[in-house]
Length: 549
Image (tube, rainbow, N blue to C red; front, side, top):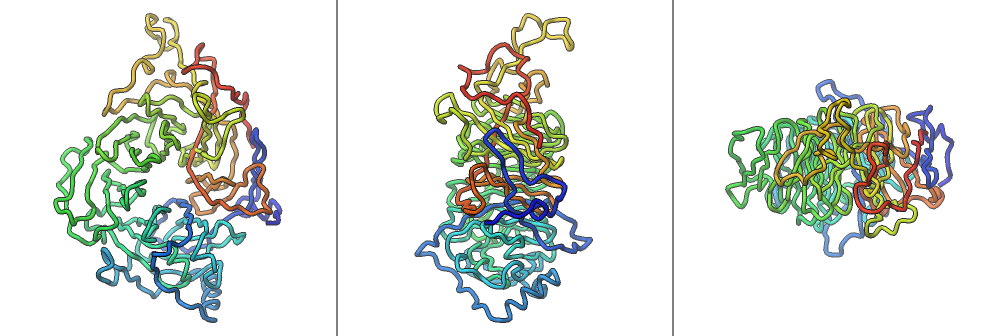
């Protein structure tokens, strides 16, 4: 792809740089994705834009799909009209296949109607095969863009007339083709086939299953959802009332299901559905107040949640047991994610810190300082490898990224061998410590199983500084995703930027065939300790200064 001028690429933020520097080279702004201006009805409000990346593999030979509608000459006219009017087929009501597709029923207007194609006049040939797509929400509309296209506009828009899409998740391993979950503010959850939507742009949504219809199971707002890895179609949905529900997509979403009243809002409690036909199959009461984010470890063994109460909680998913948890330094936690090997977690929130948690020690092992406002997204970069690192043994260096409401993206590098344990200050210092103890009590023992730990003292945790700090958007940021060729950032207003990695050429075009969420950190203050946390020093040397770009 031919490179464009900085002003063209940075149309949403003309005063920002179209690149940022790292020790391995420059990350360059390749292009942007966005959406047409939307007039939001006052009663709808807005949800923060979230980004999901979807990789469609070759269509399985045994997978059936609805025949796409043959495009006619009028489809191009409808597309042009939609571009001018900023709306789709607003008069169309959605039809949903109930449960396992046994019965059909016209939905209420909660599902809304589908707008016609915005960036294309009809379906493209590759929509039925491989492709990488970006799914993001803004106001009362869900948008789908082709990541490998230079076109800034989305190729599909789905309008929700009576509610707002708030979160979504894609399952690349779905064998039946029903791979895209969409949760809306009313509490309803929809399961659809992404491929079927792309086969027929401009037509009504082809939806398969409808869960928690009209809030019959839980009428509080959905806040997050995720597919369970290796879960055979199981997925979890979090709500603002602190409840998390486990669904199985093979079961009817319309079957009657009820759970006992939660007696203790603070304690973790699990309740299972009384009938084997019920869906959801279980309810986990996690906390008092909203669940803000959930994340599965790559092997699906563990589930992490963060909430308004400021606690990270890690559960053994199959055993339905709390492993450990801990509190933020201040305020709510807003986001969480796992390292690919499942050894570390990242959290971010209202204390402006990025927290690194160890599964082995079951506690915070580092605090990342660098954001000037709430941290809204964290991710590990599994595609990055450190210089002089073979990725084995004790010589592993992690890279991760974070974004915040300060509109900055920070990159961090971390070798756990270089994390230093703070020594206790001598008596007479400020504050006063017990001089008979040689090191901080935070590091004395592994936290007991099943306990929630209070926030440690600021002096007890090593501080990390970012490798890179770059203001990438004008608006506050809400998320980031790492792919093999690029880093994707999204702001809360639904504008996306694709940053090409050093060494990749724009002319070759991004394949972005694989995706992962990753992160890493860099030490800020080594003067607090005279000994390293673990083992020998890593051969990878941390940068002595932060690169502000």
